[in-house]
Image 1 (cartoon, rainbow, N blue to C red):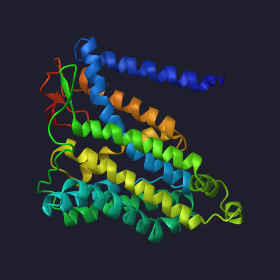
Image 2 (cartoon, rainbow, N blue to C red; image 1 turned 135 degrees about the vertical axis):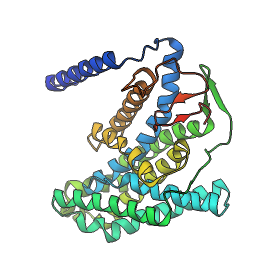
Image 3 (cartoon, rainbow, N blue to C red; image 1 turned 30 degrees about the vertical axis):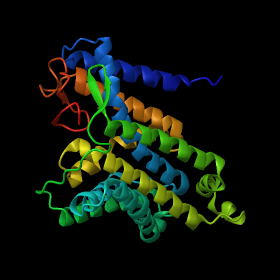
Image 4 (spheres, one colour; image 1 turned 180 degrees about the vertical axis):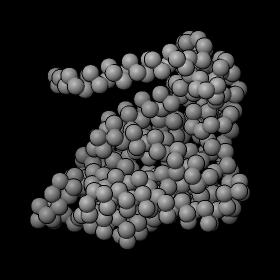
Length: 323
């Protein structure tokens, strides 16, 4: 049995102690009951699902290219706006719109971004890689602002229609059920790809030693392009799934909401998908716990969370519990 290094254990204890002190100082007074804990889990799982989906793209890209993609959230934001154009503005049925955006636009977007931008940063110094990634983030934000006026509303309806599953007096909507299911399916699919296929082995080989991998017939350019395509698809899924939760979409809002996924990816050391998903779950629980039980500067929930109105842990608005 592998032992946990004492430094890691000490750091974990310190973090738990700090969080305990913060929780004690900002406690809203809401009692912790079996029902409230169940509601906490119901709200946390979809949040964790979106973080995990976005973080999957970060891990795959970094595993294959060594680049940390700060533009992951902005890529998802662009795909979400394209999905709005197709499904809402053009009136294309939702299933077909998802196929066109997730199966068509997102892979092409990822390929073009890798081919004309990121491929040239692969062997650059770390600082250049980070600056280039942030530059793509800023560029995508600027382009989106020019195309989609920030003053106009861009509402997107949740997937699956109205209704859902009733748990502890709260409705887990079909959209959130789809979010959780998508995260699980994506985790299994990517894990099988990385561990059981030649392409996945090639991805890990290229980032370890590109020259040696090339001697065994691996094409680094194809591996890199595939990784960015997977990253773009995961960003599109995350952007489309989180968009209905924030009401009217905004370029900055969608881009920055996914920043929390960075923490989940780092928790998995940008390599382990299982640890990344665990980090996403812990982060989702932490975010939802803070919104449910803590009160920061009078902006939190100071009374028990009603069954039909709660402080949304995805954004800073009041959202109906059946969204």
